[in-house]
Length: 297
Image: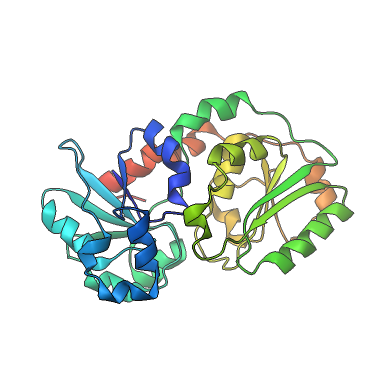
């Protein structure tokens, strides 16, 4: 079971969680309580005004709480309501407030997608994940990336990366690549009122591209979804995360690390090598959940 804690990001994947047989609910009662919670007047309201306790099916063994907007009192309340369920707090973002963990009920297990945070804070590690329900479509849609003038896609929030991304785009064009860079940075509450780009549209853009660009402000953070999309949809990847060379899916034909001693032209011309299906299967969301169940990385 997934409890949504992010009204801007996680709901984009709602159909794919559903297709994977995962029950999900929003943490907030409704949009109004989310907006009040985000405003300056939230201190005048009880904690219970904002959040709802999810309805858990008797067959559900695990409640996974995504980290964004998490309230420790609310999570402890869920823990008290369901004493026979396993409660997992999933850090799908870099840890910014480790003191929060001290407020959790001792039954709540903290897991992270970041190896650096796992080591730093002594919390359990699990991989990034992708959706089982998309694997057949991804396999059927595979095509060899264009050479020597590939199309490079970047799609993500600005986060202060615009200048660096602009320089990378100029470099790619110098080497003959075609580019589609889509930067988004909605005002604070805009995403609550506007329909964000559905993930199906993101998939369509990925399918129409040859290479995905993944750029991190913090290169010690865990993997984003871009490497997952590249691996499952058969796309090459350009990234500034040097530690990606340590990943089991790394292949120099498929992945270029910015600043490495190799020309982009050589990377563009190298044939794509499909990732071993056994490696890809490790990152499926079904196996991601099994690792929680087995307490293993």
